[in-house]
Image: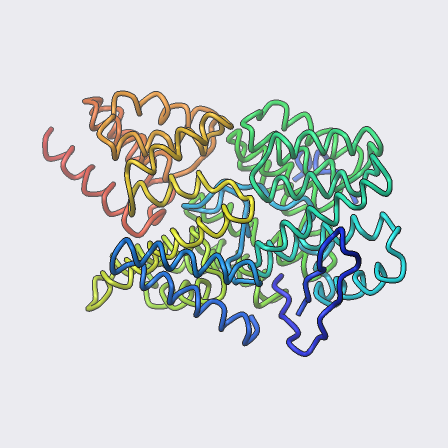
Length: 501
């Protein structure tokens, strides 16, 4: 959920000099389910500033660099770039697992008001290590939902303060795991989660973060075991959604659907209903079932009409269903509030596919803004190499895409990083080298039309025509509207293959 900034809220004074200023704030188990059936005006102003910088960047490289410098300054005072709103499986963006707590747990009320209350409490009780840990995690959630990556350094300070006051307290350790995951440092996320679980084996937050970290490190067998353990110890919405995603990555879509339905039946807060419904919408969209996807996105938005993943998912499903006008309007709304790489690329491609007057320049604006987001994220300690690789391969510097993809592959070997590296190698003209990575991306059984399209394109380029036909056909059969541009290219490639018979 996306709490609005309270512009009338008084600024909080520092809690202590050492820590710096506190910024103003303006059930049944999943296994049983599987075996059974399953912005404010201030925000708008900040986004406008960001978009102006990115538009200037489109005109020439020097201006783009200058624009990014402006964006960084905006970010450090509370800019409006949102980080990691959906798990990494969100189409065309980084494959990031959901945050270590479901939105309902920290966002069921007013997150800004909760942070303000914590700040006030800590001014009078500065040795309350539990409240420092809660504040740190709240900043992580605020960065995720409100688009302010400068909260990550603030979260780090709060969590470190908690650990200095009470070394090895599981609240701060699990919060540190969530922060590391938000910054895409999954090795540290796993380390902190393990430390937290040593102190408290039943910590829902740490159990969830451990699954996230193992998934994002490509350790899927270990992630499945961790999901089973979490399901035994703390069944509930945060664990159910991760349990389902592990099943989906291994190709068991039916089990993923059953568990998510179980999670939805267990959801009580509007935040959890929005969160799980959007996950079900995403799962349906991945399988090309747009009618079901739209129904779940509608349910998500009925619970929270500002829930970003549901707004984004609805626009994608509308585009895939042929409703381009509403898709463009919906994605414009998303990026006007939270200009993330995934929706920015999607909107740019929607403009390109539409091809109306001025659409080419509009698309270029979106791709330039991705560069600004990446610079801003990196300035706040976020590893953005996967975002770089995915966006730059099709809409930017191909050499930079390959550099970033190689760097990310060296850190973690997941289906998503394998696909990104395969595609970056392909666009760089290195198809023979790309083919093993494209095959690896589809080896777990994960059903992803973009991965199949990439594989088919690379197979065609390397002379494997029969394999290419099978992969491209599978991509379009699975999700015929998987990409505004990619789906059309897949159809064109198949048409050429058929004509050459």
